[in-house]
Amino acid sequence: MRTLLAGLCLLLAAPVFVFAEQPDEAARRIQAQVLGFDTHNDTVQRVAYLNADLGKRSSDGMIDLPRLREGGIHVPFFALWVPTYYKGSEAVRRTLDLRDAMQRLLDKYPDQIELATSARDIERIVGQKKIAAVLTVEGGHQIADDLAVLRMYRRMGVLSMTLTHFRNNNWADSSTDKPAHNGLTDFGKQVVREMNAIGMIVDISHVSDKTFYDALEVTTKPVIASHSSCRALSDVPRNMTDDMLRALAKNGGVVGVNFSAAFLNQQDAENLKKKTTQENALEPTMTGAALDDYAKKEYLADYATTHIGHATLDDAANCIDHIVKVAGIDHVGIGSDFDGIPDVPKGLEDVSKMPDLTAALLKRGYTEVDIQKIMGGNMLRVLEAVVGE
Image (cartoon, rainbow, N blue to C red; front, side):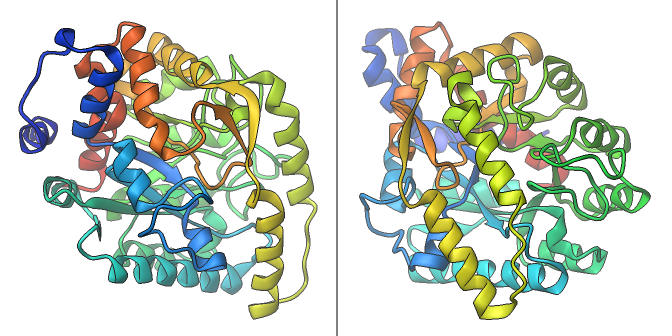
């Protein structure tokens, strides 16, 4: 594998010895130099629903271009998320709406952000001091059971897809629904094989434990859990067990730590369970613009106001520690879920706070090389293996 990370470090800055600096100073320098992958955010929803101008620093939301730069996140994964109550062609239509919203951002600020569809793109774009935007689809229902739709998403620049969201789809079980398929159906296995073939990363966040193991059995490429954390620390079904972490490591994959307070601290978990139950009960019957208006209302009710949970920045560092202990330093990354979580940890309220997490890791004894891996090197390796250079 080409040493893209080493090349990028040379592009971004000359080496400086960490021991000559205070931890906070070192953290800011290191965070400015890392690739800065964050494998999941829901910020496109703010563009689509609120016409948010991400080119300007805002007091609303958790991500915009100035705060991405301030936080040292140079490779954010923007999720094209469609609620599971969108069915069939309606789910495809809404995915295209979100892709259009993302394109409007790219077209408005070409000097600041550019779509990345390969590891080489990321190397070039970050080297030019711009944001390298990666697109994902969050939920297998969005292909409407049609591999041709999956292939077209890939042609539109989408590099990964979560196999499910809150509910089961017709070919895979979700972690937050009653099992219907005992994991992946035969067609679900075809989806995984097709994703391998076309260079799209299989994302197992949101899937049931059985779906996770079925996907690992079928895939020939590394997979990711783009925004999941540790069930040992917070017992919610969206988090991963230690056995799952070990299996993911054996596959060569990476788990992106989710910053939802409920994912990091058990005291916050009940709120998440209640929200998931409420969303799974929604069954709107409208279509088109009326359905979009309904979804906007639900989004604003859930995410317009951000709350500080019981969790703290130290809980996020604890989760990283746990994954490193169980799976190894090569299999952990960041998957904040910013703009898609109602409750955040104290100290990680938005993406600009990322240097504070790096400072916490330095104080725990992580080296600069370790942090380069966590903040992007590990995910670059997966992206290169699946998508190509």
